[in-house]
Length: 213
Image (cartoon, rainbow, N blue to C red; front, side):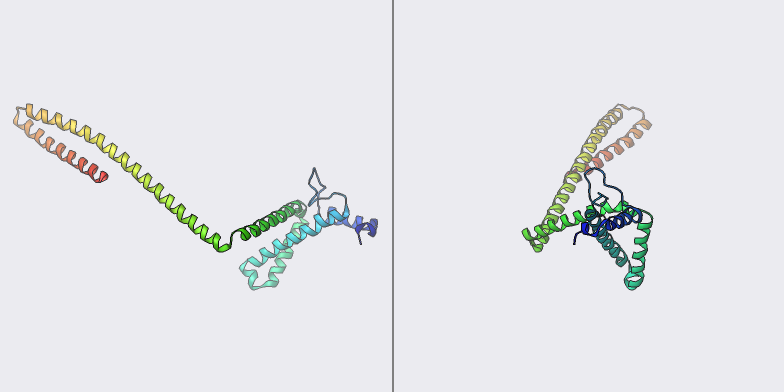
C-alpha cells in the first residue's frame, strides 16, 4: 500500500516527525537526500529510514568497539541509546542526515570497487604484488641513500682538497721564511711551525685518501 492511500494524516505525521522531532532541514538546490522535499514517500525513505539505518550501524560499531562495552553489552546498548537521544535532541540528526547518505554511497562504491578488484586480482596475488612493490620501494630508498651518501662524500672531498691547497701554500710560505731566516731563535720557531704544517698537510691528504678509497 502506498503512502498516498494513507491520507493526509500520514503527511502530517511525517512532517511532525521530520521537521519538529528530528529537525531535518528542507532540501536546497539539487540535493534531495537527507532533507525534506515535500514528498512523504521520498522523505520517509531518504530522510528517516536510510539515515537511521546507517546511523544505528555506526552507533553499534562504536558501542561494541570499546573494551568496557565488549564486556558489558547491556551497558553498550545503553550508551548507544544515549548517543542517539543526544543527537536527536540537540538537532544534530538533521545536520548528519545528508552526510549519512553520502557515507552510504561511499561505502557502496568502496564495496563494489573491492569486489571487482578481488575478481581481477586474487588476494594472494595482491599480497605478492604488495611485497614485490615493498621490496622495490626499499631498493629505491637504499639506492637514494647511497646516492646521497656519495654526494656528501664528494662534497667532503672537495672541501678537503681546497683546504689542502691552502695549507700547502701556507707550508711553502713557511718553508721560504725558514730558508731566509738568519736568527737562530726565529729559525727554530719556523722549524716547529713547518713541522706542524707538514703534519697537517699529511693528515688532510690521509682523510682525502680514506674518502676516495
